[in-house]
Amino acid sequence: RTLMLGAAATGIATTFSIRTRPANAAEFTYKFANNQTLTHPMNVRAKEAVVKIQEESGGRMAINIFPSSQLGADTDMLNQVRSGGVEMFSLSPIILSTLVPNSSLNGVGFAFSSYDEVWPAMDGELGKYVRGQIEQKGLLTLEKIWDNGFRQITSSRGPIETPANLEGFKIRVPVSPLWTSMFTAFGSSPTSINFAETYTALQTGVVDGQENPLAIISTAKLYEVQKYVSMTNHMWDGFWILLNRRAWQALPEDLQEIVSKHFNAAAELQRKDVMDLNATVRSDLESKGMAFNEPDAKLFQDKLRSAGFYADWKSKYGDEAWAILEKAVGKQL
Ligand code: X2X
Image (cartoon, rainbow, N blue to C red):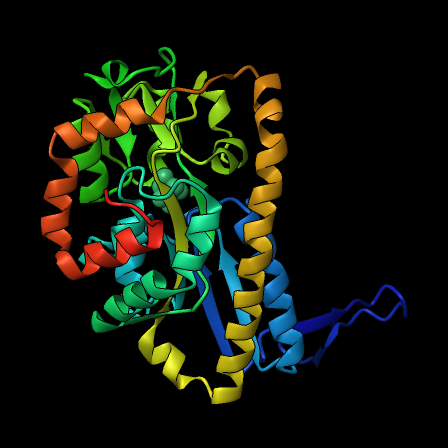
């Protein structure tokens, strides 16, 4: 970078330049891409982590955050993190299943009923199993998964009170066979749309609804284009921090440790942020005009069961993976 010193101070009509240390004189400058706004807890905490990493590495490691799908939608970014176009990318395990089929286990409908089950599972055996599956496909991921949240259905048409309300419902789902299968089992008509295009799809009426955790309904301003929130808690979703393998292995061990330490610590803080947000976000969304209802989850689960959803996915995942999930949630699905 060149620092231009103007002539104004001296009155001499010349400019000259002094070479300063370039802003990115770091040995390694990596991109971290994701689909969330800078206001979402994920990016709030990632930003802090990036500063700490820069400090602790003495400026050797710089990570630039690209929020809001600026570098491309999720399905493009998944290709980019594989090829090395981006070095780091956070992705829902359920979307990741387009590459790593069994990574979507956590998203099986109504498997998790509370965070008390989620974190021991994702920090324990289930998470370990999934990370192993991810590595087999050539990607790496940091140990701690970040929170997206329990997903709720929003609509511009009316509240979802029973499974019958989902019949024929035009709903946006992320790109993943698990989501399509689940809403097909409800008799809805799901359309796979990347998050980057979701707001517009709702605004233009391409779809009548979507499903996402409250934190995203708030930070992505989906309340501007949706009226009803039905608290179905139908699946828990997170974000793995995926790493391009070559880029990660190019880092000396001390930098690997610094990056993983601060990102994993940030994940813990971010999980708490989402919890805290959950305590206040509902009244905030109500004040913006959204109407909430709390349907009986059991009706929806029974519908999935009678449609053969669980039997179907058990055979897709295989007995070993299914057993890990059932152990994690402490019940038979
Ligand atoms: O695409 C979505 O709905 C989002 C933001 O929740 C995911 O990343 C799965």
